[in-house]
Amino acid sequence: MNIRKSIVAAVAAVCIAGLAACGGTASGTTDTKADKGLKVMGDAITYDPNHLVNGGKPIQLEYWSWGSKGTDPVFKMIDSYTKTYPNVTIKTVNVSWNDYWTKLPLALKGKNGPALFNIHNSYDALIRPYAADYDIDTKALESDYSTAAVHEDNNGKVKYIDSVINTGNIYYNRTMWKEAGLTDADIPTTWDEFIPIAQKLTKTDGGKITQAGFNFNGDAYSAIYQGLNYQKGELLFTKDGKKANYDNNVTKENMQFLKNLYDKYKVGSVDFGNDYTQSFGNGQTAMIYAWGHMEGTMKEKYPDIDYGVFATPTFTKGTPFAYDRYNGESTPGVNKNQSKEQQAVAQDFIKYLLANDDYIREAVAELNSFPAKVTLQDDKEILAEPVMAAIQPRVKRLIWPGPAPSTVESSGKIAFQNVFQNGMSIDKALKEAQNQMDADMKNSDFVSLENKYAFFDEHK
Image (cartoon, rainbow, N blue to C red; front, side):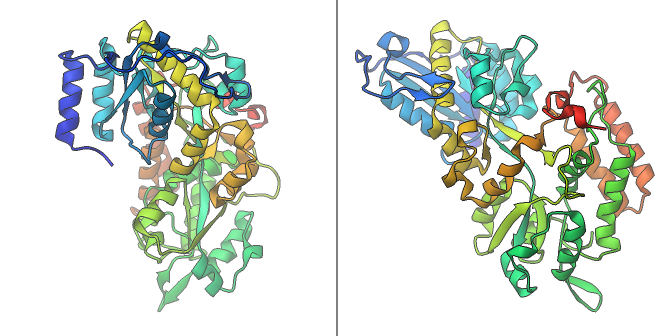
């Protein structure tokens, strides 16, 4: 998936040092055909491909990414864009994830950095100073993309939006399901319905679990607790959006609920499979809570497991404040420090992406995520995938808190370990985790975006 680190380092070092231009004027084809004979694409955001890019003169840009073909949908779109505009060359540079967030900001500071670059919203604060505003009408963005508004700054501008979004669902082993005498009619919609199903799927030998009905060991808690809190109307952050809201009665209730699944209902154990993903893939666990990345993991590592997906249960039959948190896969950024010519081509490419359904379809397929583009959210081909079908009815009731500091998950995970593995009381574990979150966020500029959620006024 990634080129060798030594090559990546060499390429990045040259760019950063300015010893050679990372893009610019290129020798090559001149395009004189403005009328490509192609249809205008898009809905609110439209793109007419029948024009000359950069006046038809040859130009070369770079696109940096930690991904590659098959994992980053932008690569395929670069191929189609440069085929339409033969005077444009977009060179792709792959940098490993571990190196990316060190090398990219250094490259963007100079004038020779990549004109286009992959973004992960968790690093928003790091790249935002170097990203240009999109040259696209904000109202058109909001009309075409359901989550665009949460990315707008105080001036109504965006530097990137979500191409696709994802959230948690329940993955279940179909073989185990059938062996337990369960059918599709038994798929639970509430947690009360979920418990006896998980018990039926649990197997023991002499009091020792040999097959877990439900397993959330490892990193699962740090994701699932957020969704459970949202279901009960509890925000992840305080009213001003600047402080974590972890040590509260709802978090305590939900921690106890999860603990009861193991201690009272015996559907799993903290001693049974430290990694919920591996346990499910090895055919030892019947159900897990996981996000869209699980699809890729199953295809790559556990292709023989027959599994299905259903929406995460809720505490009541009614509509909750939110079903879960979501997160998006970001559209590319444009380097505001590049030349006007490069930025103009980069902006044209961004508009080409956002108006083009092929980009979103590619993102759905490669990233196992739900389209943020409104016109594709009812698409039959997309909804044929189980994960997409599970997300679709709930998409309007998913909430994004913004690019939350990592401590919200890491400190939550430690609280889980303290309660489940170290025997610490829930009250003490929550208090310690809250103190850690407060310390980690003391000098943070983060402000929650929960108040941009469409149903924010419903929270208690």
